[in-house]
Length: 607
Ligand code: F6R
Image (cartoon, rainbow, N blue to C red; front, side, top):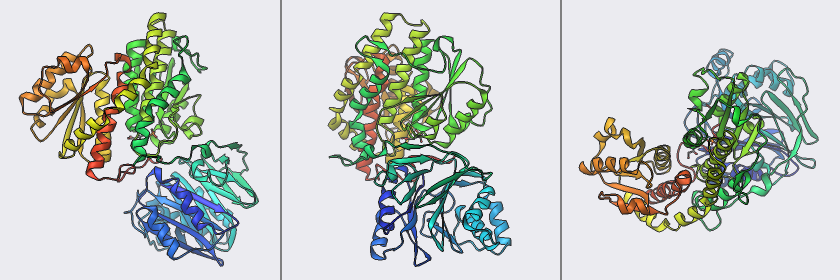
């Protein structure tokens, strides 16, 4: 989603802002812009498309000015073009914005009636006009910003700059994150600490409802009533996390290959491999006394949670309610005492997941956050942070964060199973030992890359694909389909194999390959029956199985990808890799923008 950078600096800031925006590219965007104050006047450059276009423009027509704000825009209101790109200006006010102003239509009508003209289709422009109107009514810049902020409904992070004051940026946060960076005689604003890492690692995070007056000499932070508030300054981990692609063509490829290592790190955080026991955790609840767990998340993180449900229920005999966060937050479900709630999120900033967390907070149940970004809002608002140690994930399509989420959920399921006496000490040890082997199996799967690349070449000739699986392979089938559609733009659906004959079988013909995830487990034969139904209708099957499965599946396949035989418990972690590689190489053959697929954002800070 949109990225914000602001600098009140000591040298020309436009190139620095463009560089900082590059570090926010991973969030997804479709236009970008930067504004400074040159000789007392606001000046800006904006460009549609990638940052390289803005960089060229700033190179050809440089901007002077030691104060500036910059933005990468992920379109919500109005198409991605130069006119809708931020910063937006109104009578000496410049604004960049991340989020959605929900009452923008009402404000726009009011401002139009007052004679304000709108140059763009964005909701952001109302904020620029609101502030400008306050100035016109005689308010000083800081007061004008505060008065305008009080009129806004919705989710927003904002940076506002004023012609005639080159020592002032007003920042505000209500929803999407905004961090202030402290320098020596310079101050910074950014959507996250990674953007500010080249400048400083001394960071203050604004909280919801905060707004800040940022000057070279420091910051003052206020709440919406205008009362000063204290927010602590912290050392960010952002600097050590700046990442590049190494020898890989894409971040996604690199991140797929990092999995053996990061799965190992994550598991080692929760499991003691020497004693083969789950490590004790300082939790705000006792697994033994819980009646239910509620899990809520979006997209890939939701699918990780769905696999977690199978694990908690099967091994710990602990019932799990799981919802897509955008549904959870509005369906007014009763959260019973005796429950704990888990929220799964790579970014820790997903608006719907955060809203679900706050719903559970009101219900008074203990809250755990399974997050990759420990400084994120979801992490900060939880009672316990259960980190995934995936490192920064830059590719928009989640890969290593997903398998690390699975690793945390699996480790928690072991912990819960042991605490509830649902498994014996020997079973607990066997589960921990099998998890400890997951990184090694992941390494073995990566060796199948060239075979999977060939299958992907074939897949890239089709327009529709069906993914099937049973049990934990059902959510994995949905993840395979999600991954394929989001980066290759091939239409793909994931179904429970048993549902085939309740509808989707009507789609089967030679133009729709069916990818079946079927390790040789308790219900392997059931899935083989479904494959036979597909084959009988001329469907082409790509089977992802293990050695036992390949030896016993009595069905013709277009291709069979044979993974090592792995314990059933850890299969979802290992089987995630081939479906990621399939999606990755299919997208490479299709020539799409693998790391930043169209229309998608890495950090979804609006609902
Ligand atoms: C798909 C993908 C998304 C995210 C979803 C939640 O590859 O990455 O579906 O999983 O937007 O994001 P987080 O995990 O940041 O809450």
